[in-house]
Length: 353
Image (cartoon, rainbow, N blue to C red; front, top):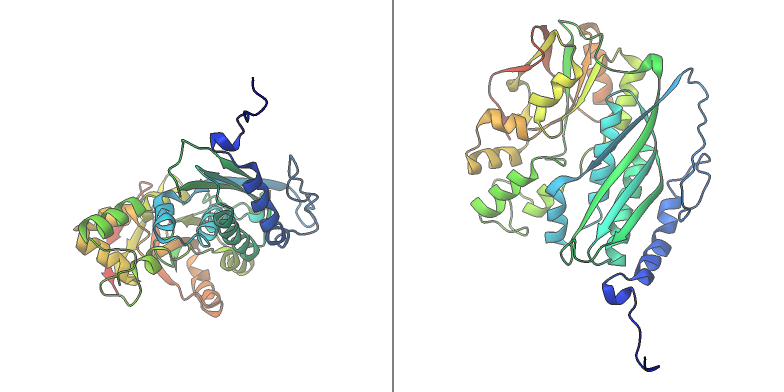
């Protein structure tokens, strides 16, 4: 073989190790700001280490969850805005373990590119670290992969894993829920991370809008409305669990209230939800009208303005509502638990802003 002929490199195959190293150097300070004294390693180790200081917890139970952001990520590609998709991911995962009363401890992410772009990595990680700091959990590790041929240029996928802890005697599993208990609805910030396949079809294929267009009936662009970050309920749930008897909780994600609320109920209990008790944000009305979506389909696809449900005894309802209001999250009683099959029934009809 001629000495002048250059041999093939990993970069020739589409994998740029130098770009990955550059991204790691740029995100290091952001990630370190999420650390606490229990994180025993820097980023870049083979395994992330976290010391389990369980003071005040008699019988610690670890609670974990893994998730992604669905096709909301397509909006990031379309807009070039990547600094909130990480917030979406962390908030979604945090809310999932809050349902069982867990306190978030640490988070790990997986980010995969067709062609790694260091600045996009930085923006995504900025969102992850912002979400982790808000939820008071550490971003202790992750994987950033470059896999040419699997993803289109300019596209990537992301998922995350969260681990939290709860004292066994304080696990919230819905087992004590009984007829007459009150269901409180906490408002969502928008679509959160669910229903985007239908939302995108309605907005872009049916309404023929672009990301820069003003959403009809709104004063914000399509991108601003659809990219609104997923709300984290970590602070609010911690407040409630200190002052009232929280019997059950549900994070309203894919499947809407219809499929998620029954997960917080015993098998012999159902729920009646009064749809007249809240006003759904304007975006949901636009989607319903433009796509001619049946109301029950709306309630099984989107959160329709209610992102999280908390079940408490009737005697605790006023105290819970007052605490939420004082925390800046005005909430309402949206229904009650009833004896019967483990399913949701609705009264009234949705109203939209």
